[in-house]
Image (tube, rainbow, N blue to C red; front, side, top):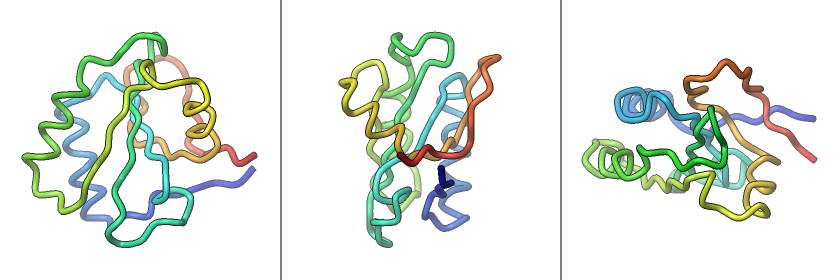
Length: 118
């Protein structure tokens, strides 16, 4: 198992975390994709998945609000957001191979901040 990190400048990470705190404080939010696997570059988008920590099969309610807040923000990068409850199991398995937790959400469950490499 190896740990992964999000390839993102600290100022942009701070902006993103501020938006997540304001718009989606209840949701778990993971980053995945090329900025986590090391295949991204400076202009790569940021891929996020939102999860309801109380019930992973339940859709989060903040997805559209988060997308709107990101569009309205000064973050100079494209951010794609998907909802865990709406994606196929194969896509979930792909995400679980390499992710970084950005928000733990409101849950008693512990969330492993290290990604799983298989």
